[in-house]
Image (cartoon, rainbow, N blue to C red; front, side):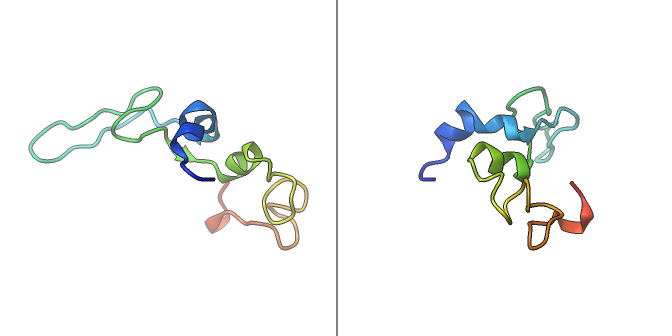
Length: 83
């Protein structure tokens, strides 16, 4: 993929779940609050790997999500049965 930041901030961010509650704290400060969109506490959020693979054009390949992917024989499985 090369340098990922241009892709991440122009398009890839839509494959992340935005975290809008909570904050980072420490060093005697209130820290940085989570908020809608990019923030210092959570960045663009938590990755949804199936969506990331789909955006990269890998969603239909066996083992990468889509048909033959998650839940399919030999396909990628989310850790601990989560999605």
